[in-house]
Image (cartoon, rainbow, N blue to C red; front, side):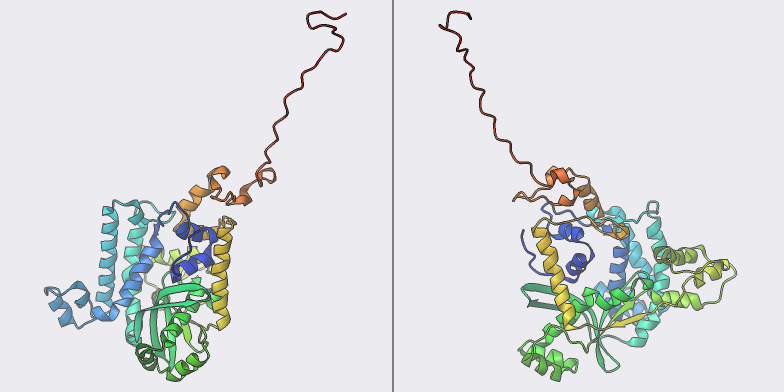
Length: 411
C-alpha cells in the first residue's frame, strides 16, 4: 500500500471519522471521487466569504465606483453594510447553483441531501444565507481583521509529514488565538469534540512549526505574535504543542440564530424562517414541546447557541492524533477494514462508493497478497481459504487369483 505524501486537516478528520471513508478517499485503487455534499458546498462558500471579508469591505462610494471599474474581481469593494454583505453572499450562492446546473462532470455537481426534491435544498440555502451573513457582519466588524488568515504551514514529526492552512490567527485578550470557522448548526459541538477534535491540535502544531525555524523568517513571525521568549524556549526544548495558545471554534451561523431568537414575534412570520429554524431542530433535536407556533420555533433551543467555543490542547493530544493515523493505516495495510454504517453516513462524501463496495461479492475483496479485505463479512466457514484436497490415488486393478489362465473363465 502506497503511503500518503502528507497529512492535511481533511485527511486527519477523515481518519478520525471513519476508517472505511479514509480507505476509499486515499487508498482505494479504484480512486472513487468524493461527492460534493450540499453542506460542504455551503460551508466552503462561507469560509471563502469570511477569508476575503476585509478585502471586499469598503465605503458606499467605493462599492459604487468599483461596479464600473476594470479592477480584478478580488480587488473590488463589494459591500459596505450588513444588508449589502447579505446580498453579496446570496449572489455568490446563486452563481454556485447556476454552475452546478451547467456542470457536465457528475463529480462536480452538488449532491442534495435526502428529503429534498430536485434543487429545493439549494433554494432553501439561498433564502437563508443572506440572513446568516448579515447577522455575521456586525460580529466580524466588531473584532477587526486578524493577524493572519489561511496561514500555510508544513512540518514533519513522528515519521509523518503534515501540511495545511490555519483558518485564522489573532491576538485576543493579550494571548494568541487559533480559530477554526465552523458552518452548520452551532449545537453540533459537544463536549468530546470540543476537548479532543484533532483539527485544532493539528493547527496548534502547525503554528509551533512556523515559530521553531532557525531562519530570519521564523524569528520575525514569532515577533509579530509576541512569542520571542516562547521561541527561545522551543529551540532549547522542542515540542509539538503550546498549551498556552487559546483555541476556538467560531460558529458562523450562531449570530443569526441569536438575533432571530431575540427578535419580537412577527404577526405573520415568513415560511422561509420556519424552514431555516426547522432545519437546525430536525438535525440536532434540541427543542421544547407544547409552545405557540412561532414561539415554539424560537424556544425549542434549550440554551442559546455560543458563537465562540474555546478550548485548549496539550502535547498528549498530538501523540493521540499521530497514533490514530498510524493505527488506521496499519489496519488498512493488514486488510482489517470494516463498515461503520450509521447516522453519520447521511452526510458522508464517500457514501456512494461505500454503499457500492458493501454490496460486492466477498471473492472480489482480496488484495494482492491474498488477504481478505472486509473479512468480517465472511461466515465462519469461509473466513479462511479452504485447504486444497489432495487428489485421490488411482484405483488399483483387481485380480482374480482363481483364474488359472487369462483366457479361461472361472472354475
